[in-house]
Length: 89
Image (cartoon, rainbow, N blue to C red):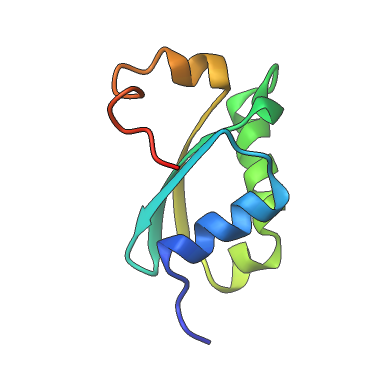
């Protein structure tokens, strides 16, 4: 099976998690994701990461070898200094 692209990882996450903003960078083996979701409200960082791993399911074990992530609520994202300049749709 081909290594997943950042776009694949983005799609996998978006299918299972409602995201306000989602950006994935990577090289097929190591990925870095910025994930903004209202589902993270009131959740610890560990719980947020578990939610993302749950969204990725078996792919996390089989295809995605390393995933670093920044998980933010929409309110936290709004406070990010770069949010206004790096907003993608």
